[in-house]
Amino acid sequence: MLHTLFHSPGQIDLPLLKRNLREGDALLLLQDGVYAAIEGSAAFAELQTCPASFYVLEDDVQARGISGQISTSIARVSYNDFVILAVKHKNQMAW
Image 1 (cartoon, rainbow, N blue to C red):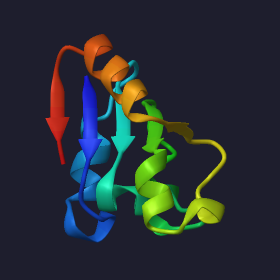
Image 2 (image 1 turned 180 degrees about the vertical axis):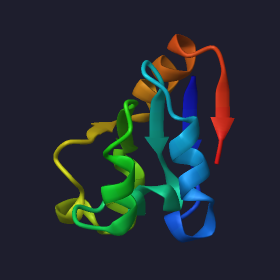
Image 3 (image 1 turned 180 degrees about the horizontal axis):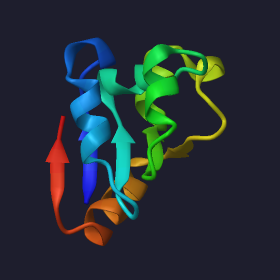
Image 4 (image 1 turned 45 degrees about the vertical axis):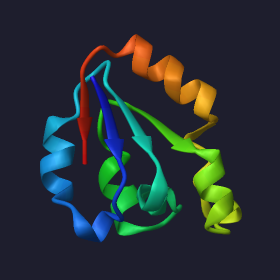
């Protein structure tokens, strides 16, 4: 399943998201969701223990001026990569 996080971590039920992430799932952080990829943040610490693969939309990181704060353990992707993830994961859950 492809999980897409559009909202900042403080606006969602992060423990619920974490419980729903499974092995083989992908979590794409975009729009204000990219703040969950900030190295050292509480949201990042909570999410990094999940078995899913993590991605962050590079354009949204750049738009928010936080490129230097994003964890290097999260893959930065383009809109084309987003499409590839959507095709690969037939089911999607938006957060």
